[in-house]
Image (cartoon, rainbow over all chains, first blue to last red; front, side):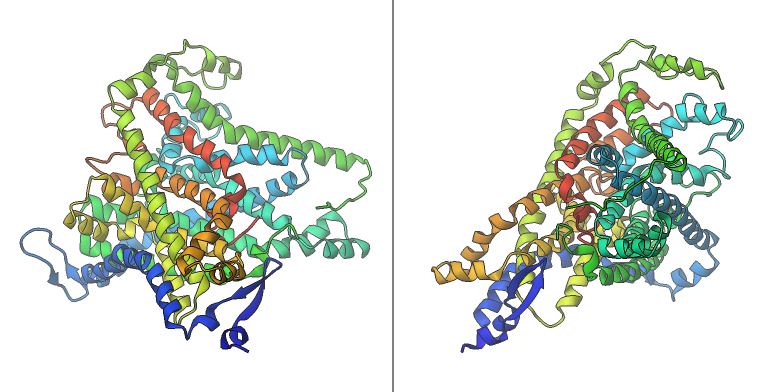
Amino acid sequence: MTDAFVSAKAVFRDGGLVIDEPAAMRNKPLANRFYFYLMMPAIIVLACITLYPFFWLIFMSLHKVDMGAAGDTWNNFKNWTRLGSDRKFVQGWWLLLKYSSLCMLFEVSLGIMLALILNRSKWEKLLVTVFLMPMMMAPVIAGLVWYYLFNSTFGWYHWLMQSLGILGDKSILGDKATAMWGIVIVDVWQWTPLIILIVLAGLKRVPRDQLEANMVDGAGEIRNFFSITLPNLYPFLLIAVLLRFMDNFRFIDAILVLTGGGPANSTKILPTYLFDVSFTFFKLGRGAAIALTLLVVTIILGMILVKLFENPSTTKSSEA
Amino acid sequence: MATLEVVRYASKTRTVINVLTTIFLGVFLVWTILPFFIMFVSSFKDLLDAFALPPTGDFRGVGVFFNFSPTFKHYIELFTERNFATYFMNSLVASSGSALVSVVLGAMAAYAMSRTDFRGKDHVFFWIISTRMAPVVAVMVPLYAIFRNLELVGTLPGLILAYTTFNLPFAIWILKGFFDNVPYAIEEAAMVDGRTRFGAFLDILPLAAPGIGAFIVLCILFSWNDFLFASIIGSGGAKTLPVATRELVTPTSIQWGKIMAAGVITSVPMTLLGLLIRRYLVTGLTMGAVKE
């Protein structure tokens, strides 16, 4: 029997038998070289546009960066030590956490409720299609539209809030007590649909036998939800929350348009502060240090997410 | 697939719950659509009409919203005075260019990674996907410096390369999933028939085609909607629609009619494209973590 046949490993994926080549091909230089060449262009391009900037970032964070003739000078970790006493930096992390948590709270609870309703609605297809629309809008356009809706002289949502007696005569984005709610509302409007989609995908995969067994044991629908449905949804919710958290690190387009971090820095979440430090004040060294803290947290979140990717319960096909 | 059939007795609680869920669904529907609707209608309003509001608390006065004579002047002015045709083309070229580059390089790399095994593969794979997750603001400064040295700032190729930073890792990650589902036996059969390895690779491409197609659309969507890269790397010669729309907001005047019109121009094509690939949306937006 040939070597290749013995070492080929068979795995089940999506119910089908797949023969993987890897082990068989390891000892065949020709095949290896072929795959290597196939992989190289992408790897080289990625290395140039990601690794190189990453090391440059580390370099910058250790220097006083001068774009003029003086050049970069070593400054004994001053960029790093100053972070501890930088109130806006600490506050930025805190606000980012607060902003993300508020968004998650509303998006996840709304998302679960709507997915449960939609799952048994006969209009599911149509309604989901409509609900998806906000996700397709560029965040910066969404920001502009909501800026218009919230405007204190001609915004319809401002008018509505006033007519309902909310807020008094303040405008939601203009007051530092409410501005955070303003940006949360926009995020909830745009991204609740994603949670609906993910939860719906999860609901289709709640094992029916467990539900039935539980009902035979006398559980009602509410009991069924908490003891069977919710635990089964858990991996889906975790993925949803992690993805949204990382997106809140990535996308500040809407916030830049809506408040720019104001009023009185009440919406200056860390990425917005970083934007200011690097692109308004051009403190590139300090910006690099802040950017690295942001990157490290992102990478940790990413590692957790990748672990979840390997969870078969979320990726196996629902048609089974 | 069968659904869980539960005998539901008609009861008062059941009726109340049904009414409540319907109301909830209705409110959410209005909440989702209203911003689109107001944007759309406002794009046809003249300046004064756009500012008309009923007095506070006067809910009967909502009709004011429809009380205007529609004008196309914002759309016409965007294209005649503001070069929106150019910006539209820039958006189109940059996003589809990057989607194409990503899908060609990505398919090759994803196929190779799906079919081969080497030490440290998991680490390489994590590095690839982590580049997709990195916050754009964080890496913008060094990227800008590189792009400036290569004289790519403000050019379309520069913008295509910039978008590739997030589209290529995404492509490799998602497409590997597609190729993992194609049995190796098919290539084996092709090679037994005398095809080369590369020929066998080309042979199985059609099997992953629907996924690849949907994926190209997603890449276009991501890059079309991007703002940060476009405003910094693309500043100058390669202005895209989101940036051009943002620039209608100036310290002295905010041209709402034009902004709403530009918003419609930017969002409508993407909304349609998004609905077209509805089936792959969950997989794409969760980077393959969830399949429908």
